[in-house]
Image (cartoon, rainbow, N blue to C red; front, side, top):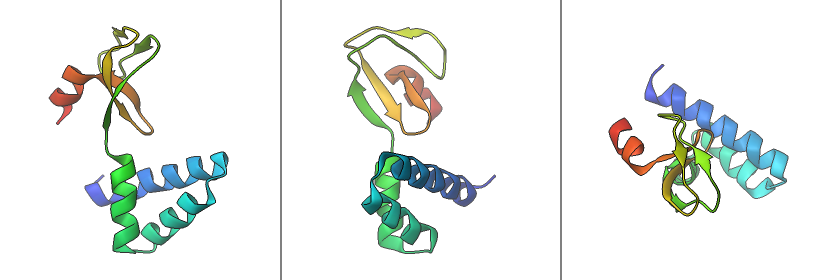
Length: 92
């Protein structure tokens, strides 16, 4: 699977998640991105980009499956979940 196929699948997942949440504006942006609108594609890529967060609860790293302590820094990726900052940097 190449990058483009992967991104299309992630945009479809984002669109579907937005639809379930009732975010019709995001659904429209995803639809435009899937039709080839470059501005909409850029917006979807921004939303899908991994983000460093502080988690308020104990979680589990999707990369190494070890616990992540409450109030720790982690990286959240839409559609994947959370991972340790160290594990995320090793994925790059």
